[in-house]
Image 1 (cartoon, rainbow, N blue to C red):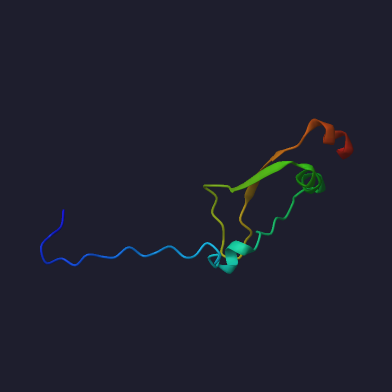
Image 2 (cartoon, rainbow, N blue to C red):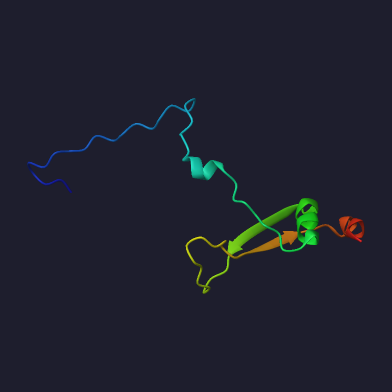
Length: 83
């Protein structure tokens, strides 16, 4: 419904497909992971898929590392290489 006297906004055209949107520098950098055990780092390299998430409910000081958890999908055929 239009209100008399109200100005109409013109839709903003999307940017051309050839021009990628600039990403913030923080999004371009991968977070630094510090592995507690060397086995974890090896399995992370063998994994076909992995995801990390922050641990909730733990207080973290300003200059401390953020505690994270990692879930990895490692094929059974690659597990003997870890032994």
